[in-house]
Image (cartoon, rainbow, N blue to C red; front, side):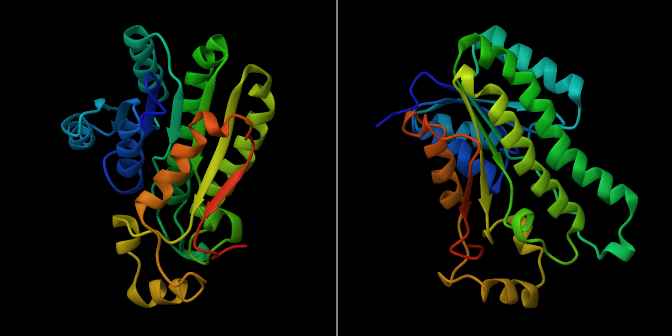
Length: 246
C-alpha cells in the first residue's frame, strides 16, 4: 500500500532516531524522500529507503543556514517541480539549569529547533501555495507542553513551535496546506540515551503506559498527518507520549 505515491517529502534531521524513522516510513508509503542532515550524514537513511524499494536522496545542509536552505529547496523544485510534505524534525538539546545556562546554549537551541523551522516553512510555502496543496508537520516535544527543569531553552523552542504552527495553519488553510505538530514524549533515541539513568527512571515513572516510546511510534503519527486521511486536520498538536501529558 503506497498512499503517498507521487509525493515529494522533505525530512530534516533524517540521519538518525526519529528523523530516520519518519523518512523510512514515508518512503515505504510511496513518497520520494529528500533526507536532510549536515554534510552527508543522511546518506545511510536514503540508501536504506532505496534498498527497500523506495525512492530517496540525501542532501547536506546546516538547517540554520537560511541561504543554504533556500538553495536546497530551489534545487528540489528544479528537479521535481513540487514539494508536498515538509517534516521539520531537526533539533538539538543543550541542557543546563537556568542559573548556569550560557547564552550561546540558549541561542543555538532556539536557532536550530525554532528559527530553522521558520526558515524551512517560508522556503516551501511558495510552491505549496502555488500548487494549492501541502502538508507541514513539525516535531515538538512533551517538554514544550509541560516544561522540565534544566531545559528552559529546549522547552521554549518546542513550545514556540506549537504557537508558530498554529499561527501558520491559520494563514495557509485556505490554500489547502495543513500545518500540524507531533509532540513526542520520552522516546528511545540517541538523545535520550544521554539522559542520566535516574532522570530517565523518574520520567518513565510518569508514563501511564509504562514504557518509553519508539521512533516508529512518532513516524506513524507523522505519516498519518502527511496523508490524505488527515486532509481536514490542521493547527493541531498530536501528543505521542504514552499518556505522560494529558
